[in-house]
Each structure stands twice: as structure tokens, then as C-alpha cells.
Image (cartoon, rainbow, N blue to C red; front, side, top):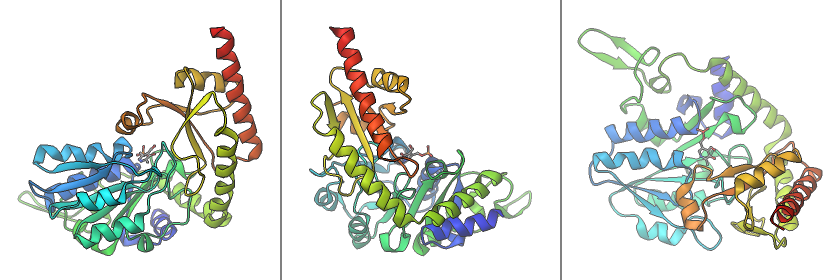
Length: 346
Ligand code: PLP
């Protein structure tokens, strides 16, 4: 059943099961890839390019390679809040070995044009690592047409249990990883061990040391079945409607400061905002009183928060189980928070 889950999860993003490794989530996939590449492929003086909108999970594991003399350089965003493709092109050098980029920002909801970035990366002989944590659950994804070498995503953002996730690789990336230094050592990831030497297994076992989250991973396969039954085209269509509606309801509210594009084109049904003069945690607490759950804080993207000139924001996001009525309740709860704080301050 575990291997069946691998077939399902690989097929979900158009990949091969043999190129698909299970992880605890996106974070573990990035850490594994960064660490293994640094010991097998990268050398002092090499560079990694990331965007300023990366979740800490797709920033810190790369930046940690600085200790080995591998530098991480950060590219800013364009006026549509996508990575600045010209700046990315301009920043790539003969030393750039990896571009590590989020497909969709967890703060802004914007979607980067991965195909375009893939061309930039591959024209320069760099590998493209895509953080698909916020895209794979929301859109039909095909690793080949994206042109990604590594595509990592988390089960718990696509209706599977926490502690599940996967990384699917292109054949070229798998060719590198099949001989790369493992990230963790232990049971299940070897061919043979003697007192003098060990031989590690190939893919995917090489990177699945120890007892894996077997039941969680099988459940991730079931989540994929469920999403396939709904149809990812239908998920996308539903979310596009929610995104349009969400922005149209919130964008003209003078008491609300919105971050990111006000156009719903190419954007997840997600808004990051602050009620003017109110801390995001207070906003979240007030919305909670109306039964509305938003996330508040820096969203594990502090460099992006600095770039936006804020410390934190509230973020409301919708998925397949939400509808227009939920968005009305969200807006009512924001008005409630504005009234409440207004009364308290007045
Ligand atoms: N990348 C993005 C864009 C995310 O939104 C998240 C989680 O919020 C992660 C990476 C990390 O995922 P996980 O905590 O499942 O490893």
C-alpha cells in the first residue's frame, strides 16, 4: 500500500514513482536536497538563487550552506509580486548551481511562472528546485511541463495528515540524487553494510532512512484519490471564483491594508491584510470570536515581511471546502473587528 501511495503521489504531479521520495513535508525535502547536493555536487564559490518571498523552509536550508562557502543570493519581486524575472536572469552567473523558488507564495498567494524560470535555469546549467507546498494542492501540476528538477510539497496542505509530504524529481535530478550523499543514515537505506564499509541503496530508499510515516503516507495516497475524483481543473476553477470574490469584497475597505496584488489573476484565494492600527494577532482573536480562523504573524517569511515593510499580517485563505457564504462571514467578521477595536479605542 505504501508503494501504491508512491505511484499515486508521483502520478498526481506527472512524475515517476522511482523518482519520488516521501518526507515529513516540504521542509524535510528542502533540507535533504540542500544537504545532499552540498556534499555531492556543489563546491565552495557556487551560488544558490532564491526569491525574497520564500518560506523560511526554502531559504534557511540553502543559506546554511554558507558555512561551506556556498552563497545564497536573493532576488526581489516585480510589480505583480512575482519573482522579478529580469533580475533573476541578471543575477544568474556561471557559479549559480541551483535556483530554489516557491511556486506560490504563502503570504501573497501569487504564482511564479516556473516554466520561464526553468528556461533561465537550464540555459545556465542550473537545477531548479520548486517549493510546491502552496501550488500542488491548488492546481493541476505536471513536473515535466513546469520544467522543474525538484518539486516538493506537503501532504497536510492537500487533505492528508500532518507529517506527510513528497518530493518528485526530473530524470536529470534523479540521476544526481541516486549517487548523492544521504541526509540520514539507518535502516532501509542501504544495500549492504560490513564493519569496513557500507553501500547505500538507490532511489527512493536512499533518502527514506528509518521507519517512515507509513499510515500517513498511505492516507496521502487516499487524499490524492479524493482530489483526483473532484478533478484538479475543478479545484482551480472553484478557487479562481473564490479569489475574485474575496478580493472584490475586501479591496475597497478603507480600514484594511492589503498586501500583494489586488488582481485575482494568477492568485490563490488568499488575502494577507492588516486592519489599520491593529496588530494581526488582535485581528485573529476577534475574527476567532466570530468562528473565522485566519493565520496571523510573519508566516515564516520574515525577509518578505521586511520587504513589505511590516512585522506581521493576518492571512485568510480558502480551499475546496469554502464557498461564497464563508467569504461573506469573513467580511462580516472583519467589519466586526473594526467596530470592536473602534469602540475600544473610542
Ligand atoms: N513552503 C511554503 C510555501 C509553505 O507555505 C510551507 C508551510 O507553510 C512550507 C514550505 C513548509 O511546509 P512544511 O511545514 O509542511 O514542511
